[in-house]
Length: 75
Image 1 (cartoon, rainbow, N blue to C red):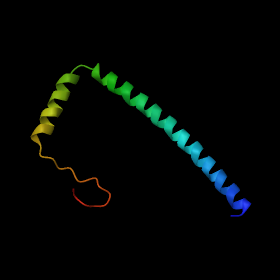
Image 2: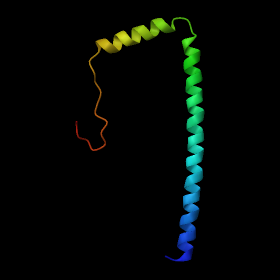
Image 3: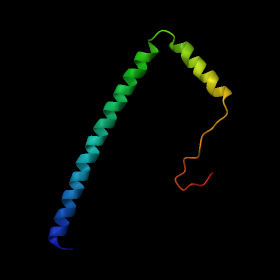
Image 4: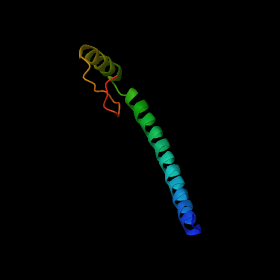
């Protein structure tokens, strides 16, 4: 390979590394935010009753999920 091509590839890889680091930071921030929201919701009046109702509703309804395989085959 030519040196210019290798330099270009190196720059792209470094750029992708920076993007990956940024995304990991964002994921960490979202994790912290979602945890805080969940803890706040648990302190709200009626939380336990609402969770119980949701569990009962889910138990009563038949599963309408679809397979998540990317190859389109049902396991």
